[in-house]
Image (tube, rainbow, N blue to C red; front, top):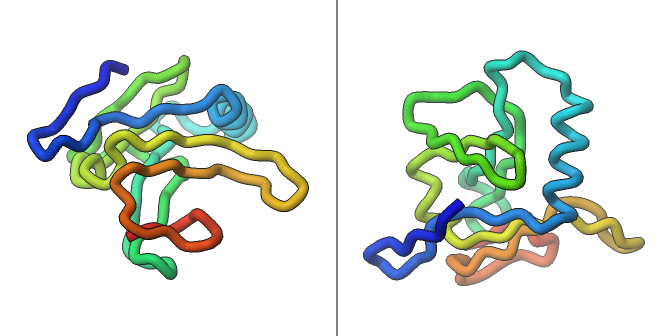
Length: 118
């Protein structure tokens, strides 16, 4: 995916580390869902810092953009792109933490668990 910079200077686009891409491909294979289901990356209100990240399987909606990255198709609501521009999604398998980690340059604050931001 090419990097685009919005007028605000925020980098547009989401990147996946090799670890995240591998885990997402594993989840897609395990999900074995209907062809109209996509992986959704987004945000929703809530969490201790204001917003929580979304990573789930969902059907495409009118306001979604489809992205193709590392052989993975995923959807992002156009309204969420402002919050996610430049975000790197990683997957960690450490002893103390296991799961997806979001490195978001737009976050002014984050919580200790790394799953919410403001």
